Image (tube, rainbow over all chains, first blue to last red; front, side):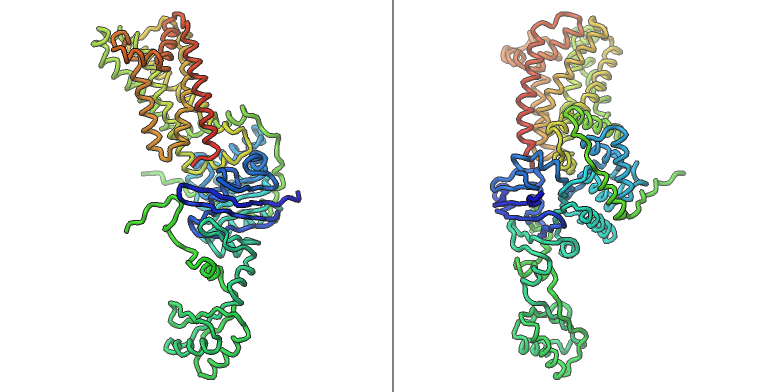
Amino acid sequence: MSALAIETHGLTKVYGDTRAVDGIDLSIARGGVHGFLGPNGAGKTTAIRMLATLIRPDAGTARVLGRDVIHEADAVRSQVSLTGQFASVDEDLTGLENLVLIARLYGYRGAAATRRAADLLEAFGLADAADRPVKKYSGGMRRRVDIAASIVATPELLFLDEPTTGLDPRARNEVWDIIRALVAHGTTVMLTTQYLDEADQLADRISVIDSGKIIAEGTSSELKHSVGAGALHVRVMHRDDREAARRILVRELDVTVDTANDPQLLVAALDDRSRAMRALTALEEARIDLAQFALGQPTLDEVFLALTGHEAERPDTDRPEGTEEAA
Amino acid sequence: MTTQAAPEPTATAPTEAAIASALASGARPPRPGALTTSVTFGWRALLKIKHIPEQLFDVTVFPVMMTLIFTYLFGGAIAGSTADYIAYLAPGILVQSVLFITMYTGATLREDIDKGVFDRFRSLPIWRPSALVGMLLGDAVRYTVAATVTGIVCVLVGWRPDGGFVGVALGVLVLLVFAFALGWIWIFLGLLLRSQRAVMGVSMMVLMPLVFGSNIFADPATMPGWLQGWIEVNPVAHVVNAVRALMDGVAVGGEWVWVLGWSAALVLVFGSLTMWRYRDPR
């Protein structure tokens, strides 16, 4: 039981000219949630599919719960579960039939399989929809039956590939609650997401992945800290004052001050928090009315920008199998 | 319109306590064997037919059309009369009806893979080929429906097989064995090619010479030498010979070796290729 949940060295997967996963080293302890954060096409799904034994690495090694994903693939499969990015249930079958199918494949027989399936549907609030085809389910219900299918036999480690992509905020919160319940029970969860707040909310530790490489790793606070001591957000009461306020901040803080789209907002990354007080005093003396003067940790959005030099969201430019954009 | 659409399924939010108790009771039963898991996947295929019965369209309407068209189109020209021709054609058209339907296996698999269901199956700790074997077992039901429909149409048109019911049933059994073996080609193509359309296209290209370059429609003695040479080795021609012998109530002889040999070879070669590809499909 002492083995790590996941341990990889130089894990690599190449598709044609693309190094989808490019030499990843991971060392993830058991328990809690580990987040894999990155934009579309960063290599999150490819990495998870290798760890779940669905595809074979081209180079490097990976051990999951102490077992090698190539040579002991079957042993890995018996201890992990996967909920894929796209529905990994059969949408032509009913919710009950889907879970009975999985229960039988795990060795439940006849009535025991049906009972296990019904219990899970009940626990996931889907008892009323048990006999409807999954294609008639809402997005949130589909996700729930998908996760239920993953815990028909309780896994040691659960892979969740973008579990809340495309869900409305309520359904998203429900999935988050489910994940927290799984973790409270002792299951280790490895989660991919492109939502920074999701990683922030759920993950104990986060690996930031971009273009197939891990570019940062740590707790949410550590990642934020690595970008700087904090971010200062100043909002002036009158937009005409913004330029004057900006000059005072540059002088007092000795850092660059960004002007956002918001015509009253100024944002500065601080190295030294003590200077913030001097800046506030200087603004007061210049009689500039302030609506907001807030010192906080940077958001993960800002972290991502600082780490990669580009925004976290890069829609449609590098999906794994995306179509060419029309010029 | 007097009825309204069914109401949207309702669902209540799951609670942490309920999920915890579901997890706690998830102690695993003993691992099921290869046969159990294969049959379970066969059960899934039958459930899909139950939910979408339109899937049976191709195994019912298509064979009827083929049988009627070929009988009345060529009957007079080839054998002098429809009644004489059906005696020759019926076993062959049975083989053709079933073999054409085997092709859908690859396209169905591709669809499953594209939708993501296969990711779950492949992540389960079960005998690896069982999802694929189960698919073919489910398909055997479809083949049986197609063979039954074709047989009935042939009888209606005037076919009176000398082998009787037992001979016909044995012929269909031989055909099912070969169809199961041939299915591994389509499954391999379903894993190899990345779109459903490509799978259908290539499958058709493979199947055409097998089915039409055969002794299904006419006596090979009337054909040029190169074609006779092909028919000599074409596995489908040997299946037709065996099925024809059983249904006509005559000795099958050496054709057993050909049919079973070809079936075993197909499973061995394409089954292995499939399982190699199954480890790391796109």
